[in-house]
Image (tube, rainbow, N blue to C red; front, side, top):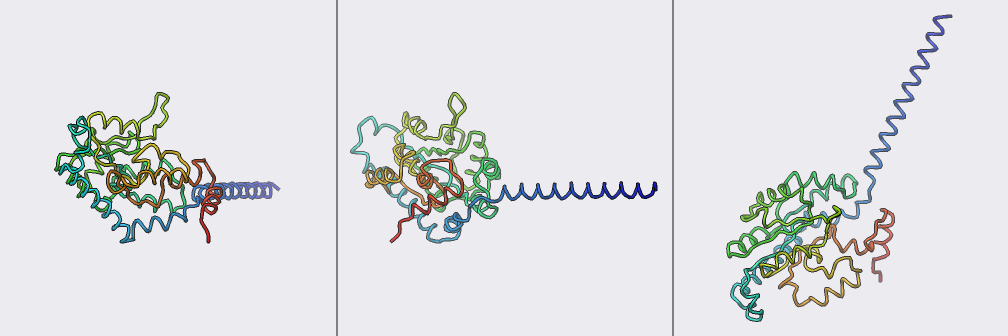
Length: 287
């Protein structure tokens, strides 16, 4: 009788352990599934275009060739004669974005696509701290040329201040000759520790002592605050207003992976993957 009771107890314990194992395993699998179910496949084409298309490289070189020609024109004083005397006396500066303008972060984007993970600060910070981003074609040659001509280059990015040293190290590692704490201006926070994403205060800071010869970036927000949080129609209208400055004072780099252009499609809202997909589909212009 005692032997039967012991066998019965053993069976109950075994079933309990097995049940606990399968519940735990199932919960863990569900957790993994939740972490890897973001709708990122639509970004694959844009990421591949940046990584594998010679056309992308051509566009990047074209942008920096234009920047070179416009800088030479300014150095030859062709553009300076029309400026007020106070502006003529200021030293020249270039205000340039970093991500997808100087540094290529497409491997980080590719990782998101492959693992089906949405953009998040933890993964982004891990990528930044690796300091493995390569240079955008044409960027290093042009910026080193500008530096050799005495033009101050300001790298203005919305990376976090905590990422500053890693950013400086990465910029130096791709071959840039003049990068320091002074000319790398990252995103600041307000008195309530909220991030200040607009670059306008940093533009005004540079303009106190320098004449900004050109703005270079992959996002129109890099050039002027008139584009910030505007609708698609308003962004088009503002672009039409500056069309004569594009390729001269404003140099654009292509970026189909992400940017304010996509946020405008979502009307700058916090949407689910399904809602974003619906917005993208609705935004397509059909025959």
